[in-house]
Structures are given as C-alpha cells and as structure tokens.
Amino acid sequence: MDYLTIALPKGKLFKPSSDLFAKLGYTAEGLSDKSRKLVISNEEKKVRFIITKTADVPTYVEYGAADIGVIGKDVLKESGKDVYELLDLGFGRCHLMMAVPEKERRAKLSDYANTRVATKFPHIAEEFFSRQGMQMEYIKLNGSIELGPIVGLSESIVDIVETGTTLRENHLTEITSIMDATARLIANRVSFKLKHNRIRPMVEQLQEILDGNQ
Ligand code: PRP
Image 1 (spheres, rainbow, N blue to C red):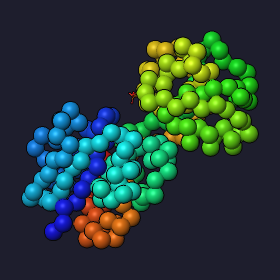
Image 2: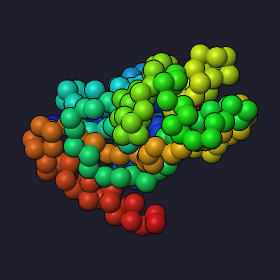
Image 3: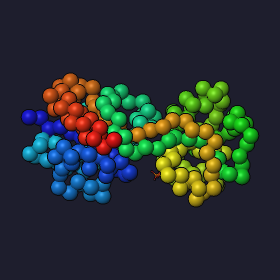
Image 4: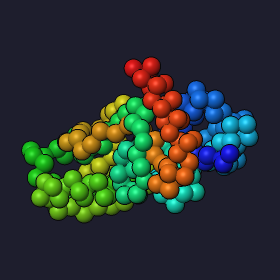
C-alpha cells in the first residue's frame, strides 16, 4: 500500500485537524505544530504527515507533494490553486472583512475608494472591491495586519476575524464582511484518482464523524 501524505497547517487549524485524523486512527508519535520534525509517519497506517506554514498547504497539495491537506477556505481562495475541495470540516470558522480605526469611520463604503488597504489577502480584496466599482491600493503584509492603519501605513485592513478580540483591542471597527470561511479538506487531482481506494473511504469516515459532531 502506498503512503498517503497529509499536509497539516501550523497554527490555529493544527490541533482540530490532527484531532480529527486521530479519530480515524491516523496518529503519529510527536505530531505537534511545535515539533521541529517536519515529516512524521505512521508506518502501520501508511500515513505520512507533513507540517507546513498555513499559506503553503495548497501549494504542496497542488504539486502532489501532499495527497491531501487541511486549509481554511480563505487561504485556499486567495491561493488560486487548482485542487479538489473534498469536505467542509466545519471548524476554524471565521470571516474575512474590511475594518478601519473607530475614529476614522466614513459614512459609506465608497468613501474609501482610492485609499490603501493592508492585507494578507490582496486577490480576494481586489475581487471584492472591483465588484463594488472601487479602485484601491493593496499593501501585502504577512501578519499583524491590524497595525497597518494604526501607524498610517494604510487607511483600512482586509483581514480575518474570529473572536473579534484583535479588532477590539486595537480600536478598529468592521465596515463590511467579505466572506465566511471554515477549514476544508483538499486533495491533489491526480492523487484523488490514483489513491481513490484510500481517499474515498477516508472522506466517508470523516463525513460520518462530522455528522456525529453536529
Ligand atoms: C489572525 C487574524 C487576526 C486575528 C483575528 O491572526 O489575522 O489578526 O487572527 O482573531 P480574533 O478575531 O480572534 O482576534 P493570527 O493570529 O493568525 O496571526 P497573524 O496576525 O500573524 O496573521
């Protein structure tokens, strides 16, 4: 039997993802996002986990370096990668929105036309603002996006909100929601065909587990 390679993202999705695979018996000693070991296998189940930076999961899966992976719908959409989306895993629920400093709130969305937006999601942001007929300047950041408007780098941000704590603590207010997101199970298109006999039953089992959680 071939190994099934599963890409798991470091960060917030790591624990719920590894817990979910553990329910299938796909466990591996030392599997942790804090681990310096990047490839961890379960010889008996013929499963190999690779632990990657969140934004890189779709790349490993698109190229077939991982057969399947777990990634947020937001990051998946931003990546534009060509992979199969097999399941909505339900966890990692959040939404992508535009926010500005509370004190600089303008009357309507179009009042922000031609201003600067700091974001980790320039493609999704551009798609959204062009649909509103708004031209913007996009400043790509890799983290702590909320800092942008506080220090005058940009007028607004487009970023993820989960609990709302980061917005509150930095005195930012949401202007408009752009998309909702949850974690997805994705597969490489070729692996999905060649390893169908492994991936198909796994997806069915995962679906049963998720249905039981509801
Ligand atoms: C994400 C996101 C927000 C924060 C939102 O950042 O970019 O900053 O979480 O969560 P909250 O609504 O629960 O406060 P993350 O922690 O992934 O780190 P980053 O700033 O390095 O991207």
